[in-house]
Image 1: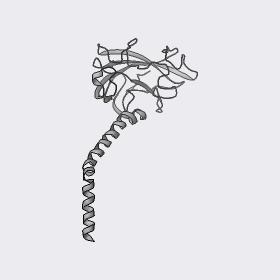
Image 2: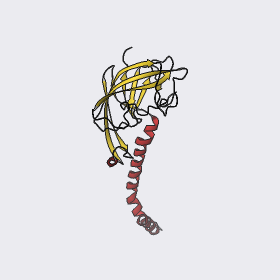
Image 3: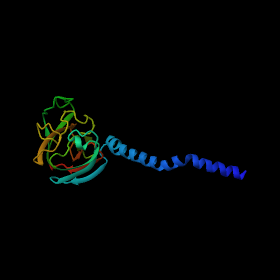
Length: 214
């Protein structure tokens, strides 16, 4: 009886030795795939979750991240590769405005009833050619309410698309000058006060900048 059991055990190991050798590789590949999906899909769906820098009024915040370029729209040579991105940002001003100039793709053409519009002036710096697609400027009130990232008025109701780009610049990369200024408008509920500006590219990382004193 003992001989039969030992023979069966040896037979099982012989039949499955290939799968046992392959199993660690399969587990490693599955873990890598899960990690990729978390970084590139789930973290993006969760919104900003990892603050990488913060700045006081008039100070510069440094944003840095590695992202996976699946399409290589700006540089085909970078398709399906990891790319490093660094951008410095400084808030020059945050002011309420009475009128807005929506883009042709805007969901709204005027400030909705019960809303307020804020013009955010920024100074940006990055290496020429840095991908700026997906940049988000988010306004945060003292109670933590966020506007500009799928909030009460949507992520981009005025159709400004990528607010990091200079006016009338249809490229999605940093200009040759390396430093430039932009203005974008974000809608909040009427009566809100802007305390902090978040700057992100739609993923998990973001930087915070204190709003200038009124």
